[in-house]
Length: 307
Image (cartoon, rainbow, N blue to C red; front, side):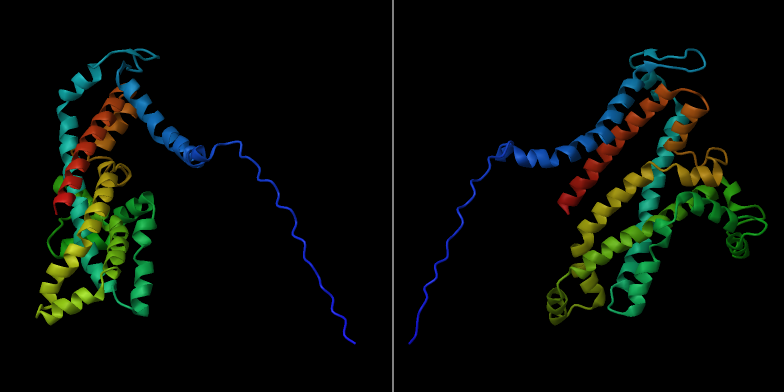
Protein backbone atom coordinates (compact mmCIF):
# COMPACT_ATOMS: atom_id res chain seq x y z
CA UNK A 1 0.00 0.00 0.00
CA UNK A 2 1.42 3.33 -1.06
CA UNK A 3 0.52 6.56 0.61
CA UNK A 4 1.11 9.77 -1.30
CA UNK A 5 1.63 12.99 0.55
CA UNK A 6 0.91 16.24 -1.16
CA UNK A 7 2.93 19.16 0.09
CA UNK A 8 2.14 22.73 -0.64
CA UNK A 9 4.61 25.56 -0.45
CA UNK A 10 3.33 28.79 0.87
CA UNK A 11 4.99 31.91 -0.42
CA UNK A 12 5.74 34.58 2.10
CA UNK A 13 3.84 37.73 1.44
CA UNK A 14 5.94 40.30 -0.38
CA UNK A 15 7.14 43.10 1.77
CA UNK A 16 5.76 46.41 0.84
CA UNK A 17 8.39 48.50 -0.93
CA UNK A 18 9.56 51.36 1.16
CA UNK A 19 9.23 54.70 -0.41
CA UNK A 20 12.54 56.48 -0.78
CA UNK A 21 12.88 59.78 0.97
CA UNK A 22 14.79 61.13 -2.05
CA UNK A 23 12.93 61.13 -5.38
CA UNK A 24 14.44 58.83 -8.01
CA UNK A 25 15.30 61.64 -10.40
CA UNK A 26 17.37 63.36 -7.69
CA UNK A 27 19.36 60.26 -6.74
CA UNK A 28 22.03 60.59 -9.49
CA UNK A 29 22.63 64.21 -8.52
CA UNK A 30 23.00 63.17 -4.91
CA UNK A 31 25.60 60.58 -5.90
CA UNK A 32 27.77 63.02 -7.84
CA UNK A 33 27.14 65.91 -5.48
CA UNK A 34 30.10 65.26 -3.14
CA UNK A 35 32.52 64.97 -6.07
CA UNK A 36 31.23 68.21 -7.58
CA UNK A 37 31.56 69.93 -4.22
CA UNK A 38 35.16 68.74 -3.78
CA UNK A 39 36.06 69.82 -7.33
CA UNK A 40 34.45 73.20 -6.67
CA UNK A 41 36.34 73.61 -3.41
CA UNK A 42 39.67 72.61 -4.95
CA UNK A 43 39.46 74.57 -8.22
CA UNK A 44 36.82 77.28 -8.25
CA UNK A 45 37.32 78.72 -4.77
CA UNK A 46 41.11 79.26 -5.10
CA UNK A 47 40.64 80.64 -8.61
CA UNK A 48 38.03 83.11 -7.39
CA UNK A 49 40.28 84.16 -4.53
CA UNK A 50 43.24 84.60 -6.90
CA UNK A 51 41.15 86.83 -9.18
CA UNK A 52 39.95 88.89 -6.21
CA UNK A 53 43.51 89.20 -4.93
CA UNK A 54 44.76 90.31 -8.35
CA UNK A 55 42.47 93.35 -8.08
CA UNK A 56 44.02 94.45 -4.80
CA UNK A 57 46.86 96.90 -4.25
CA UNK A 58 48.98 95.04 -1.75
CA UNK A 59 52.67 95.67 -1.26
CA UNK A 60 53.36 94.07 2.09
CA UNK A 61 56.27 96.36 2.95
CA UNK A 62 53.97 99.40 2.77
CA UNK A 63 50.64 98.15 4.05
CA UNK A 64 49.78 95.02 6.07
CA UNK A 65 46.32 94.54 4.53
CA UNK A 66 45.18 94.67 0.90
CA UNK A 67 43.15 97.55 -0.51
CA UNK A 68 41.18 97.60 -3.74
CA UNK A 69 43.34 98.75 -6.62
CA UNK A 70 41.33 97.77 -9.67
CA UNK A 71 43.47 96.89 -12.67
CA UNK A 72 46.68 98.42 -11.30
CA UNK A 73 48.48 95.07 -11.19
CA UNK A 74 47.49 94.25 -14.77
CA UNK A 75 48.73 97.65 -15.94
CA UNK A 76 52.07 97.06 -14.26
CA UNK A 77 52.17 93.57 -15.71
CA UNK A 78 51.81 94.88 -19.26
CA UNK A 79 54.83 97.13 -18.71
CA UNK A 80 57.00 94.49 -17.02
CA UNK A 81 59.62 93.61 -19.63
CA UNK A 82 61.44 90.89 -17.63
CA UNK A 83 58.11 89.19 -16.92
CA UNK A 84 57.19 89.01 -20.60
CA UNK A 85 60.66 87.66 -21.31
CA UNK A 86 59.88 84.96 -18.74
CA UNK A 87 56.57 84.28 -20.54
CA UNK A 88 58.40 83.84 -23.83
CA UNK A 89 60.95 81.59 -22.16
CA UNK A 90 58.11 79.53 -20.67
CA UNK A 91 56.52 78.97 -24.08
CA UNK A 92 59.87 77.83 -25.49
CA UNK A 93 60.30 75.61 -22.43
CA UNK A 94 56.84 74.07 -22.90
CA UNK A 95 57.21 73.40 -26.62
CA UNK A 96 60.75 72.09 -26.15
CA UNK A 97 59.74 69.77 -23.31
CA UNK A 98 56.83 68.26 -25.25
CA UNK A 99 59.03 67.91 -28.34
CA UNK A 100 61.67 65.99 -26.37
CA UNK A 101 58.96 63.78 -24.88
CA UNK A 102 57.52 62.95 -28.30
CA UNK A 103 60.93 62.29 -29.86
CA UNK A 104 61.96 59.96 -27.04
CA UNK A 105 58.59 58.30 -26.37
CA UNK A 106 57.62 57.20 -29.88
CA UNK A 107 60.63 54.96 -30.66
CA UNK A 108 60.63 53.57 -27.12
CA UNK A 109 56.92 52.70 -27.38
CA UNK A 110 57.50 51.01 -30.75
CA UNK A 111 60.35 48.94 -29.28
CA UNK A 112 58.29 47.92 -26.24
CA UNK A 113 55.24 46.99 -28.32
CA UNK A 114 56.23 43.34 -28.32
CA UNK A 115 55.04 40.30 -26.41
CA UNK A 116 58.22 39.39 -24.57
CA UNK A 117 59.45 39.23 -21.00
CA UNK A 118 62.14 41.82 -21.75
CA UNK A 119 59.56 44.28 -23.07
CA UNK A 120 57.34 43.81 -20.01
CA UNK A 121 60.26 44.31 -17.63
CA UNK A 122 61.42 47.39 -19.52
CA UNK A 123 57.88 48.81 -19.43
CA UNK A 124 58.00 48.69 -15.64
CA UNK A 125 61.53 50.09 -15.31
CA UNK A 126 60.88 52.96 -17.70
CA UNK A 127 58.46 54.48 -15.20
CA UNK A 128 61.28 55.30 -12.78
CA UNK A 129 61.97 58.85 -14.08
CA UNK A 130 58.25 59.66 -13.97
CA UNK A 131 57.73 58.56 -10.37
CA UNK A 132 60.98 60.10 -9.08
CA UNK A 133 60.33 63.46 -7.35
CA UNK A 134 61.66 66.58 -9.04
CA UNK A 135 63.78 67.48 -6.03
CA UNK A 136 65.64 64.15 -6.27
CA UNK A 137 66.10 64.51 -10.03
CA UNK A 138 67.25 68.11 -9.66
CA UNK A 139 69.98 67.38 -7.13
CA UNK A 140 70.94 64.19 -8.96
CA UNK A 141 71.44 65.98 -12.27
CA UNK A 142 73.30 68.81 -10.56
CA UNK A 143 75.80 66.22 -9.36
CA UNK A 144 76.01 64.58 -12.80
CA UNK A 145 76.69 67.98 -14.41
CA UNK A 146 79.17 69.16 -11.79
CA UNK A 147 82.39 70.40 -13.39
CA UNK A 148 84.61 68.58 -10.88
CA UNK A 149 83.05 65.16 -10.32
CA UNK A 150 80.10 64.95 -12.72
CA UNK A 151 80.37 62.06 -15.23
CA UNK A 152 77.91 63.68 -17.65
CA UNK A 153 79.96 66.90 -17.63
CA UNK A 154 83.10 64.86 -18.30
CA UNK A 155 81.40 63.23 -21.29
CA UNK A 156 80.12 66.55 -22.67
CA UNK A 157 83.58 68.07 -22.18
CA UNK A 158 85.19 65.16 -24.01
CA UNK A 159 82.99 65.60 -27.10
CA UNK A 160 83.35 69.39 -27.06
CA UNK A 161 79.84 70.35 -25.91
CA UNK A 162 80.98 71.77 -22.55
CA UNK A 163 83.95 73.82 -21.40
CA UNK A 164 85.87 73.65 -18.17
CA UNK A 165 82.95 75.00 -16.14
CA UNK A 166 79.60 73.29 -15.77
CA UNK A 167 77.09 73.66 -18.57
CA UNK A 168 74.70 75.04 -15.95
CA UNK A 169 76.87 78.19 -15.84
CA UNK A 170 76.18 78.91 -19.50
CA UNK A 171 72.81 80.65 -20.17
CA UNK A 172 72.03 78.80 -23.41
CA UNK A 173 73.45 75.49 -22.25
CA UNK A 174 71.63 75.59 -18.91
CA UNK A 175 68.28 76.30 -20.57
CA UNK A 176 68.79 73.55 -23.15
CA UNK A 177 69.92 70.86 -20.70
CA UNK A 178 67.08 71.56 -18.25
CA UNK A 179 64.55 71.34 -21.10
CA UNK A 180 66.02 67.94 -21.97
CA UNK A 181 65.84 66.77 -18.35
CA UNK A 182 62.23 67.94 -18.06
CA UNK A 183 61.30 66.08 -21.25
CA UNK A 184 63.20 62.99 -20.13
CA UNK A 185 61.21 62.89 -16.90
CA UNK A 186 57.86 63.17 -18.68
CA UNK A 187 58.69 60.63 -21.39
CA UNK A 188 57.53 57.49 -19.49
CA UNK A 189 53.99 58.85 -19.12
CA UNK A 190 53.74 59.37 -22.87
CA UNK A 191 55.34 55.97 -23.55
CA UNK A 192 52.65 54.17 -21.54
CA UNK A 193 49.89 56.10 -23.33
CA UNK A 194 51.36 55.36 -26.77
CA UNK A 195 51.83 51.70 -25.85
CA UNK A 196 48.14 51.44 -25.00
CA UNK A 197 47.25 53.09 -28.32
CA UNK A 198 49.58 50.78 -30.26
CA UNK A 199 48.12 47.65 -28.68
CA UNK A 200 44.60 48.78 -29.58
CA UNK A 201 45.36 48.92 -33.32
CA UNK A 202 43.64 45.97 -35.08
CA UNK A 203 46.13 43.58 -36.64
CA UNK A 204 43.87 43.36 -39.69
CA UNK A 205 44.89 46.89 -40.70
CA UNK A 206 48.54 45.88 -40.94
CA UNK A 207 47.64 42.69 -42.81
CA UNK A 208 45.53 44.61 -45.32
CA UNK A 209 48.29 47.17 -45.84
CA UNK A 210 50.84 44.39 -46.33
CA UNK A 211 48.59 42.72 -48.91
CA UNK A 212 48.42 46.05 -50.76
CA UNK A 213 52.21 46.05 -50.93
CA UNK A 214 52.95 48.58 -48.18
CA UNK A 215 56.39 48.31 -46.63
CA UNK A 216 57.29 48.91 -42.96
CA UNK A 217 57.71 52.68 -43.39
CA UNK A 218 54.49 53.00 -45.36
CA UNK A 219 52.58 50.96 -42.76
CA UNK A 220 53.97 53.19 -40.02
CA UNK A 221 52.94 56.38 -41.82
CA UNK A 222 49.52 55.29 -43.07
CA UNK A 223 48.41 52.88 -40.32
CA UNK A 224 50.30 53.46 -37.08
CA UNK A 225 50.51 57.25 -37.01
CA UNK A 226 46.82 57.96 -37.77
CA UNK A 227 45.77 55.48 -35.07
CA UNK A 228 47.97 56.96 -32.31
CA UNK A 229 47.75 60.62 -33.36
CA UNK A 230 44.81 61.54 -31.11
CA UNK A 231 46.47 59.89 -28.11
CA UNK A 232 49.74 61.72 -28.76
CA UNK A 233 47.97 65.09 -29.06
CA UNK A 234 45.82 64.59 -25.96
CA UNK A 235 48.64 63.38 -23.72
CA UNK A 236 51.00 65.97 -25.20
CA UNK A 237 48.51 68.68 -24.23
CA UNK A 238 48.39 67.41 -20.65
CA UNK A 239 52.18 67.27 -20.46
CA UNK A 240 52.40 70.74 -22.00
CA UNK A 241 50.13 72.16 -19.30
CA UNK A 242 52.30 70.54 -16.63
CA UNK A 243 55.44 71.93 -18.27
CA UNK A 244 53.96 75.43 -18.51
CA UNK A 245 53.56 75.52 -14.73
CA UNK A 246 57.09 74.21 -14.07
CA UNK A 247 58.91 75.66 -11.11
CA UNK A 248 60.74 73.02 -9.08
CA UNK A 249 63.26 71.64 -11.59
CA UNK A 250 64.73 74.95 -12.87
CA UNK A 251 64.63 76.41 -9.36
CA UNK A 252 66.48 73.47 -7.82
CA UNK A 253 69.11 73.35 -10.56
CA UNK A 254 69.82 77.02 -11.32
CA UNK A 255 67.53 79.25 -9.18
CA UNK A 256 66.44 80.82 -12.48
CA UNK A 257 69.97 81.72 -13.57
CA UNK A 258 72.46 82.25 -14.97
CA UNK A 259 71.44 85.76 -16.05
CA UNK A 260 67.75 84.81 -15.71
CA UNK A 261 68.21 82.32 -18.56
CA UNK A 262 66.02 79.72 -16.84
CA UNK A 263 63.60 82.08 -15.11
CA UNK A 264 60.13 80.83 -16.05
CA UNK A 265 56.81 82.41 -15.11
CA UNK A 266 56.51 80.10 -12.11
CA UNK A 267 59.83 81.37 -10.77
CA UNK A 268 58.78 84.97 -11.48
CA UNK A 269 55.62 84.39 -9.43
CA UNK A 270 57.64 82.88 -6.58
CA UNK A 271 59.97 85.88 -6.51
CA UNK A 272 57.02 88.30 -6.61
CA UNK A 273 55.48 86.69 -3.52
CA UNK A 274 58.43 85.70 -1.35
CA UNK A 275 61.16 88.14 -2.40
CA UNK A 276 59.27 91.26 -3.48
CA UNK A 277 56.36 90.61 -1.05
CA UNK A 278 53.72 91.42 -3.69
CA UNK A 279 51.15 88.60 -3.56
CA UNK A 280 48.53 90.61 -5.45
CA UNK A 281 50.89 91.09 -8.38
CA UNK A 282 51.70 87.37 -8.35
CA UNK A 283 47.96 86.62 -8.43
CA UNK A 284 47.59 88.81 -11.52
CA UNK A 285 50.41 86.87 -13.18
CA UNK A 286 48.63 83.59 -12.40
CA UNK A 287 45.38 84.83 -13.96
CA UNK A 288 47.19 85.88 -17.14
CA UNK A 289 48.92 82.48 -17.22
CA UNK A 290 45.56 80.74 -16.96
CA UNK A 291 44.04 82.79 -19.80
CA UNK A 292 47.00 82.25 -22.13
CA UNK A 293 47.08 78.54 -21.38
CA UNK A 294 43.33 78.26 -21.98
CA UNK A 295 43.68 79.91 -25.40
CA UNK A 296 46.60 77.64 -26.32
CA UNK A 297 44.62 74.56 -25.23
CA UNK A 298 41.69 75.56 -27.45
CA UNK A 299 44.09 75.93 -30.38
CA UNK A 300 45.57 72.46 -29.81
CA UNK A 301 42.13 70.85 -29.46
CA UNK A 302 40.99 72.55 -32.67
CA UNK A 303 44.08 71.21 -34.41
CA UNK A 304 43.25 67.73 -33.14
CA UNK A 305 39.70 67.91 -34.55
CA UNK A 306 40.98 69.02 -37.96
CA UNK A 307 43.41 66.14 -38.19
